[in-house]
Image: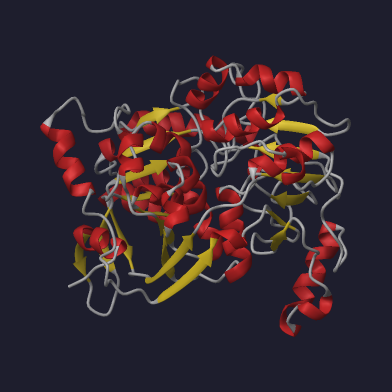
Length: 476
């Protein structure tokens, strides 16, 4: 019987199915961090039990950590308490921790892939919604709540109901200035922020297959913003080449271990006649640089377009649409191109990898940021920062007036010290633009690293294509 990629992985991990109920799903890898794990560990301690399979759990500090002066004691009380509690819990339960100061510390969805922990065919969970990032490797990866974090720590299993299946095909060649962030923002505006609710989404098509692994991670990262349970992409030679040689990847020096794994990974694809509950086809040529104008990631448009007028909005959606524009200080029917920007944030688990930093550095080299714009570049991990410095990328940023900070979630979520002031506009490479997401009353435009870099140079929302000329940048 023909099967989808999702079904092949799911069926290998079902321990048992409860009649008229969910399945007991075995979890291969569990990532934890300082914000959603404390209550879970408290639950274990109250029951007098230890982590069931500590070797399959990896911890890092990322959400609520400072991104400057990480060598100093944490000033903010809640952040310090959370990080200290994570240290204590990991020590007591023998869980591997990559805390502040560790060479592997970073955003959980950045360090998993770069260390070779994330591999095809796995089931992966974390107490963070953007765990879907890991699906770029051909894995079932999704976020869980704190009570579920406790369940996985205690049993290495999770109760899950199998989702419906959707495939989104993107075929053709990408236009100049269009990168993976534009693809996923386009999809979001097409199907809405709830258009994939209840589905596991497989991304396919020639445009997806040509993307690098880091670009694929950006796509899967934001599948959760469509309401999807998870997003995934079938692994291929690009995937295998990325994994090969990484620290925790199977040994690949001609060993049987690598060959055996590779043989299994090569079977991870949707069969030609596999059935999906829903399928969407998109032409890559229809996508231009994309940007959000509202307060959810589905409220986006092409950079050359106008914000929808009120008569273009469905009657039931008008109250939310008007409320969103009021919060953003924008007018229906107006252009967003040219809108003043106060802050630029390039980072988060969506766009903080070395390819993102390389792309931005190549674009801004020899240019200066606009007066009055504050630019934060926040690498996704210690390894990304180290690599950026070794390649001289940090010097390009310094000369442009950008600030290269230290690894962490930073201005993505307004939880740590890196907040956008009230009323200020930020063009951000992160994944959410909800009210107050980047700080109370902060106003956020979501865009690609290229579009964010262009705004940093001009001081306003800009069509990056106008600044590229004949310049060719590798899609990422």
